[in-house]
Structure formats: structure tokens, C-alpha cells
Image (tube, rainbow, N blue to C red; front, side, top):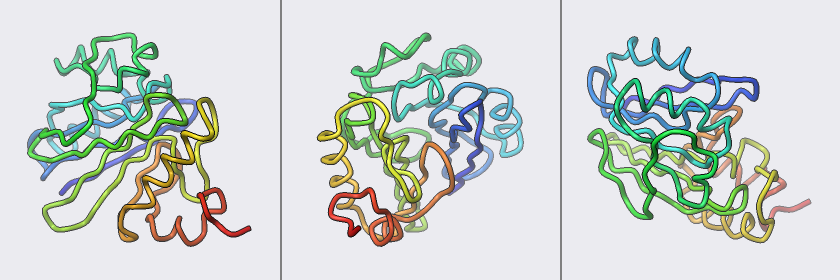
Length: 194
């Protein structure tokens, strides 16, 4: 499985490309502000064609380039309807449950809290590795506290903690981590010591 990511825009939000292999269809997750400039060469480098645009939530740093990407590649953005106010281009509602896109099965986990429509995307690689793209709900060593409901965010973090420790976390900002590392050392997670 191919996973490529880059940070873009003034808030250095992570945009990710997911594909079974180079040279075919891919999923673009979180095409935020400033993402088009690095997105175009990243797609060319791996010879990928976007067939789905997905958003973890509707903040501009995660959907700011969605309208341009949608127009260029002919695919609408999919995001949770509760966050649709943040989208300026064509979009489709993101339903709970697995999506079959680009030869991948992408799970959709509702994670309200950071925003009412925050979600995470889960993918199991054909090679067996597990990924979760958490947007601004969970970061390496921190959580997304801006916006929505604290009670909802705590419930959503508990949902994430049901995933396996070896699940690789690809957050909306900052470096990748694993769920096990965050469970052991992230002081902001429910039930953490300190």
C-alpha cells in the first residue's frame, strides 16, 4: 500500500494520499489550504489519479483546496453533513460505515468533539498494517481541543482507544505516531495518569 503525506498552508495541515500501489487510483484525505501546490507534483511522482476526496472535518485548513481539487479531478469532496458549512465547492455526505474507493476499504468513524462532524478514517493495508487518519481529534502527544464539545471529544477519544495498539495514527497536524504510544504517553487521553 502507498501512503504519502505532506504539510501545507499556514497551519501546516497534513494532506494524505492513499493507494493500493503507485500508478493507479488514489484517495486524497484533507486537501486543505495551500494543498494544491504540493498535491499536483506528489500525484505525478507516484502516477496517481484521485478518485475520492475525503475530509476529516470542515475547517478551512483541511478543506480549503477541496473546491479546486474537485474541479481539477472531477470528484466531489465527501465530508460529514454537520461540517458542510465549511465547504465552498461540491460535496457529498459522508455516511458511516466502510467506503470502497480506489481499491481500498476505508472505514468511517464518527468522532464529534473538535467539530460536530469530525470523523476518522481507518484503512487496513493488504500487507496487514492498520492506519487511522484522525484529523484534529488526536495528535502525537496531544488532542484537538479547539471548537466543539469537550464531552463529545472525550467519548470520541475513547472510541479511538478501542483500536489496536499497533495502529499507525496519521494526524491532521504534526508527526505520525501509534495508538499504543499515545495510550501509554499522551496525558490528554481519557484515563491517562497525571
